[in-house]
Amino acid sequence: MKRVSFSHRALEVAGIGLFAVAFVFLSSNALRVGLNISGEVSIGFIALLFVLSVMAADFFSGFVHFLCDNFGSAETPFLGPNFIKAFLDHHDHPQDMVAHDFVELLGNSCLGSIPLLVGLYYLLPLDGSTPSLYGNIFTLMLILVMVLTNQFHQWAHNPQSPKFVKKLQRLNLILSPENHNRHHKPPYDKNYCMTSGWLNPFLNRIRFFDIVAKFLGKSSSKS
Ligand SMILES: [Zn+2]
Ligand SMILES: [Zn+2]
Image (spheres, rainbow, N blue to C red):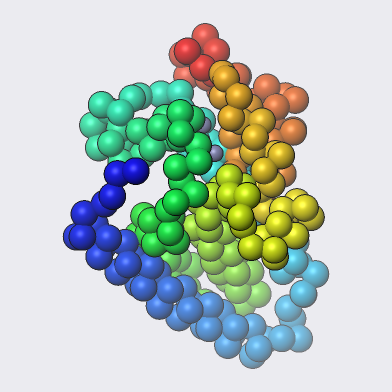
């Protein structure tokens, strides 16, 4: 397995640290506002927002995965070596990612999510109203679940996952090995979603990615 350089490792650690600080800061702000207007806040609606955030993250993970698997190559400028190659290599060596620690799994996602957290702070400020609070809660949960998706993916490949993870997988709350294994069969054109996998059966049934591939100029979702 190719090891990353010390400087890249340091960048990933810094990214996780910065993400954690920004996320805790924004979450505690949302909690403070929520406690101030607790009489107007619906716990049921927040639970619904959580389900919707997992579904949105699942869809996003599937769409990015589909694009990386089907368009461009390892030689594509910037995206090739940084994203596409990892997806293509993963088909040939799916168990390699089991050896990655959480810094390797989450570092890049955390780095990429910091601008989203900054954007949330400035574009959707908490003004004490329930819409801004709900918007912040949904966006924070969405970003957190998107960041954790790579870890869920690794757990789906890791037979030695912790017991609580296996429980979450059995309950279908996170991506299960059974759900994800359907992707790892040539031509690798099913079950692209990797957060919870909830959307995979539906998107397979309506041939969503085949339709998008045709729309984008491919005769099938896999060449
Ligand atoms: Zn793939
Ligand atoms: Zn995989």
